[in-house]
Length: 199
Image 1 (tube, rainbow, N blue to C red):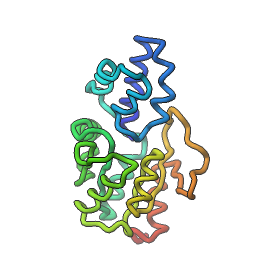
Image 2: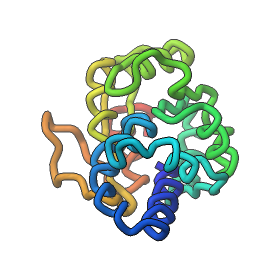
Image 3: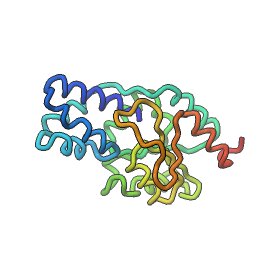
Image 4: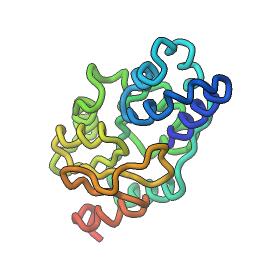
């Protein structure tokens, strides 16, 4: 979710330079979780080559408050962590390095690694294989409908993170009973309720 700051900065720059582009902003956010190029084309048809560079500028993302502490605690608990994203690997690694979070994730799966992005479960299944983890013992924390669907199809436990200030607030409850997490600290709280890791 740290990449949201980069997206918000790019959208703001686009609208500032071309106020008429504001008409596509809600469409862009409504498709969060899909590959960036697809979202841009849906929001601003025919302008992808013009708009995409705004999203690829070396704008440093920043982690949400509590994320660094959460990852340190998960590391102390001995959990294996991975990132599965619909962004390209170069952007993912750049963002992880800029936020200082890269060392927490031995496995990073990006758009380059899959033939079909989320909501396909392909990226999650690949991450599980590289971690040597089984779906039955895995939890996927995502922030979009595509994440929830991908996790469900991969056979993992899925929780949806709704902390921060999303451009389009999610519904108060998600279909199929997906657990909504409103604070990063809830990840550890819920894991301990599952008995992973032992409290």
